Image: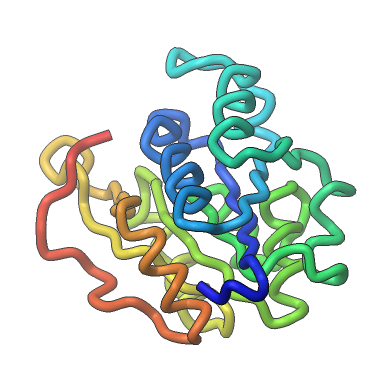
Length: 200
């Protein structure tokens, strides 16, 4: 990484609550690798208590991992692109609902507005899918984003093909490498993993 200027990444989490335990450490990993990390939470992630943990608990864990307070409002994320506050956005996990919003061009959540804000100034958006209908309803939205400039996918595969045959999950361990290549304008390959992933 260029020592003259510390790179900054916005790291967004959505409401795939069963994946947050694997996603949040990736924010800490990027910080440990020298990134300045700005954490972002969707409305669902920031406001929903589930059996996987409380919203306040996840917010505190993400803030601690990133070393920065969480951005969870539209007004907090809108300046990311125009004020050049970040070089890229990572969405990990990215739910089917967020995929649909991005594909439709909607910017009505902190995560989707962060994407719009950074795409408008040519910064990459790295998508780590986690959705039970990736090979069903969300498949067309993934395909639409793959055709658009600025979007890059963390390699993904089926995580439980017997019990959840439509489910897709990104290998979050590949977030840093995907981000690095995205900043150079390259999609990491292969996108489709040829090895099994652990179930959610």
